[in-house]
Image 1 (cartoon, helix red, strand yellow):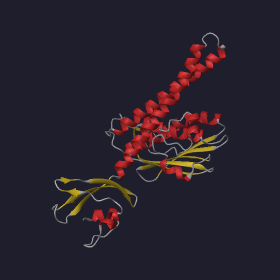
Image 2 (cartoon, helix red, strand yellow):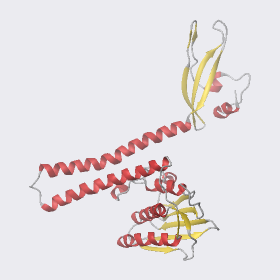
Image 3 (cartoon, one colour):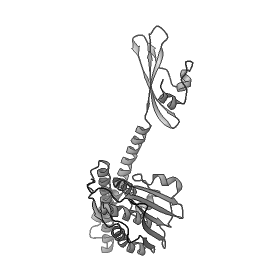
Length: 314
């Protein structure tokens, strides 16, 4: 008996502890002449998933005992569940546009020459849109795969922090205006320059601003802000007064393919991978990202980045 076992099972080992006190209603392995068997069971104790392998020991003709080997498989089970969920999500995300593409192309082929010109153009537009959606999903998956295996080709340069934020603002201000939103930038002109992959960081901030625009009802307010926390840490925030996110969903928002409202996200063109990529990209810059939100009141995303990374970073 060792301390880990006591911790897993919630018992203190004593000479008079019984098998039932240790393992509840697990069956004992059989022990017969010329044959030894073992049993493997799975139990849950204090939120941990454990496998217990039980094998008899000692002489066959005398009272012996049972040897128990315990493995904590909680993390392995979580990884297996995450892998299965990921495969199911990828399959679903790709199957939906494929189904739409096939349906519309079959209609165009079956009714070739009989459909009004406007209908044909509309159907072809849907096919193109769904194909682009599949391309976005595949591109995002490849990005995540490269990040997972440290194969992302990050190009670190020394650049103007303010110019990067201004580029994001200029890229998104028209989109925000089309949705009736007020979009402003609050960043001092004298922000120090920083080292990093400017293109990738712009991609992260654009993605977050894009989410704020998508999920804020018409006439909302969105702010992109930045400030120095100290000599080496830059804080970038994107805040909106949109629909917000339920409290229970917030911890899972950076998971791959996780969506609060799947139907609404797909309708708006989301892949469910944007925040997962943002988190991986920020962490590749030795930074951190967090999200606070309140339902019907708005969301605030905060990114912390060091500005003095060595230029030879991979």
